[in-house]
Length: 70
Image: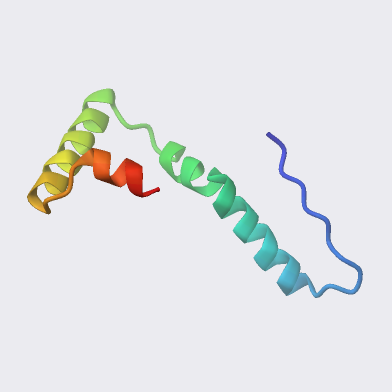
């Protein structure tokens, strides 16, 4: 999935860079890069998911609530 962004005529580099960073954030690419930066064992991934579920239950939210609010 290539990302494309055109720099407008006479657009300052700072503004173009800000737009590019927003484009990366919206595409989810930066999140994916951070996630893949270090290898995480599958058991650690499962443990993190279980902790997230337990935290949501303690706060009174269910995982389904989070999905429906998006």
